Image (cartoon, rainbow, N blue to C red; front, side, top):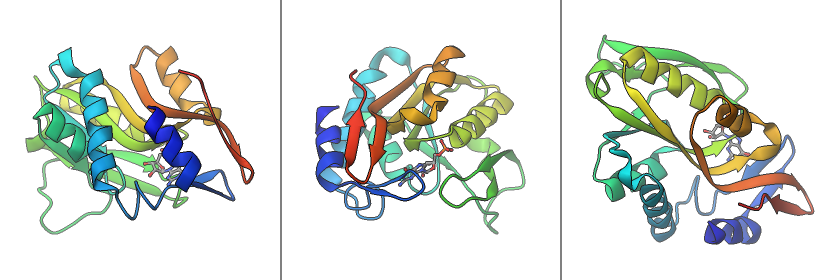
Amino acid sequence: MKALEDKILKEGTVLPGNVLKVGSFLNQQMDSDFIMDIGREIARLYEGERVTRILTVESSGIAIAVAAGIALHVPSVFAKKHKSANMPKEVYTAPVYSYTHKETYEIAVAKEYIGKGDKVLIVDDFLANGNAVRGLIGIIEKAGADLAGCAIAIEKGFQGAGDELRAQGIRVDSLAIVDSMDESGVIFRAQ
Ligand code: 5GP
């Protein structure tokens, strides 16, 4: 998605530790129109796939998951990272090591929101080492649902997880794939 690559080049900054900061449009501040463009692009890619639910993990994936859900006219569900009082007892869980926080969370989705007969599209803002996506795939498997694929805004291709998942036969669509990045700039994979 050329517009996403342009936005990353214009507004993104590379932080130490291979972290790409896109707080001005995707993470902390969200560019509403642009988020909807991302959602429509994801919907275009999965139009004929009979997706019944979008699944993401809180919190940074939620905005584009909702945008994709609006465009596909299906509900968006997010996995919670922290136990809360209003979380039902019946949950599917999976451990996920967080790339940005350097700790392991138990992510959880209430059983009532995902199940057999669902065709689930995973949506996330970043794909780095693939831990978040693998945790979400684990939850889909436990629920007995089918995986439609993974739609990612920004894949950090140099970390390898996207290509590993593709090699396993999992559909992964990333709207921008970063091949390399440092303080002097970002280089994208031609798609
Ligand atoms: P993974 O589980 O694939 O290693 O990392 C994916 C998660 O870590 C994403 O949900 C995202 O929130 C966060 N993340 C990974 N790399 C980056 C990055 O370079 N920038 C930002 N803003 N978040 C990242």
